[in-house]
Image (cartoon, rainbow, N blue to C red):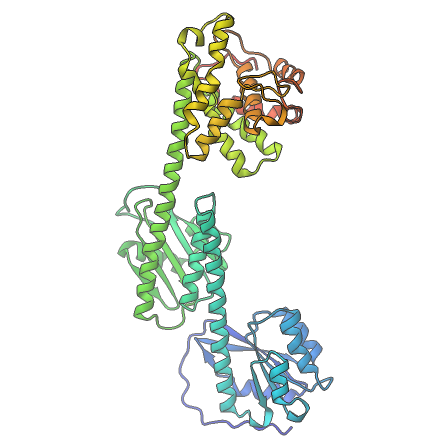
Length: 523
């Protein structure tokens, strides 16, 4: 072996806290190269991480090991092994087949003429080219250090890209269910990337909703809101189930001081929110000393993440308020009919169930559910004498009653809110019939909006199953028989078929939301 390594005099070693390893794959068919390389780099550390060596003695073995260790930081790669170009084929395999652009490939050759540097640099995606004879201990140290810095920066950029991508994707539908968790997870990833951390992180929020943080705030009140690393998929768990004793103490200290606590290679940052009793951010794997700029960044993050959280909570509060107003106003209309109870609420959940079974998207099904309580809002324009008449309506009275569909549509049609717009459609179409004999427009088949078709069946099913001023409640068997008999007439056949398959589930909705003091349903 002609390789020459020069070793400088070693200074007195200093104790370094090891926070993990950088994987270095040595690929060479000469065992001595492995031994000398490991010896020369035995005390090497970077960002408080030492080197973990993996040895491959052929190109074929190298392919297997790099596939099994995709987090390898550096490959020290010999060119000539079982074939004259074995190392070059490994480099091509890593880049083109394994799609690994992160690992830094340093080509080492004892026969430069076999693989000319210019040609190799142009044709193969390698990061450095060294002749074994020039790779002294000092130069080996230098090339490993520069390669690890590049690898670290590539990881940071990739983490940043992934975090930004998650935030952008989350922002498209930020206010839908679970999007806040995705948003926070993306911001966590961005922050850990900026700080050079690639290990564990979590955001824990209080499970107790309140206006201000209690003076006796306790980490045991906190649950994991978003997590990375070992805390991934721990959302919703109490922190005492996922944190060790030392971390719980650090959480306690951050809560008590309402500040950021720095320990060894991790931090716990207190976040203030008017919606929770207190939130805590935990990040580990920090690279050595945290600069003042980084501390300011963490403080800014702790503020901004809570602002984002509060904005989403406020949006949810507005949406919940709108839905409650729809329910309460719709129930107020129903109360004019001297029937009390949960008719509009039951119709809403029945509509949602049928919509999902029909194949509507989650968004469409929810829109129908929230809008369906408005189906009879036009009854506010119907006189009480007609609305509450216990006997059959005469011809003139029936014509007045039928106008509630148009009245409801006129009340709602000019809204710019999608739920109110859907309510207008339902108000207008829920008395149209599949065969064209309904009102107000005599629409037929698919000319009737799907919202109206579903709401019509849901409304009739629930109305027949409960007592009204003009009738007693029907049994479930009689209701099903009636709806089946109206297939192709009043109702769309496909909807009737779906209904008959789901009667048991729909009956459970009736039981869950009974009319107040109602024993009228013939269960």
